[in-house]
Length: 137
Image (cartoon, rainbow, N blue to C red):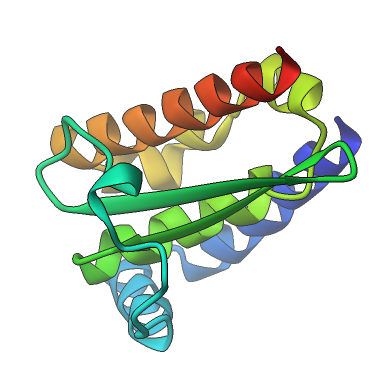
């Protein structure tokens, strides 16, 4: 569980240094463009439902840990999902299920997220928890 807190605080620290919405946009676009590849998992089985943009999540389980890969056709969402997978990937399923992210409560990021982006990120987090439950069974 501590690794989740540490990773999330590290990401929040990056965003807190950016200070303005404009700098956050620029940074997310920069990161999103860096993740410009065609991953092997872009198929309908890994496509999330309920999001305005296309988001793919791929999960695999190795020695009790869940690993997550993500991709989106939207550059900003691609960067945001990258950060979410950095927080949750390489963790035990029980830690993922029990962890409650404080990412959306951060005042810098909260003002940045539109309702659509916020909903997309909630769908992603719910799907990550759902997959963690499946690995427990």
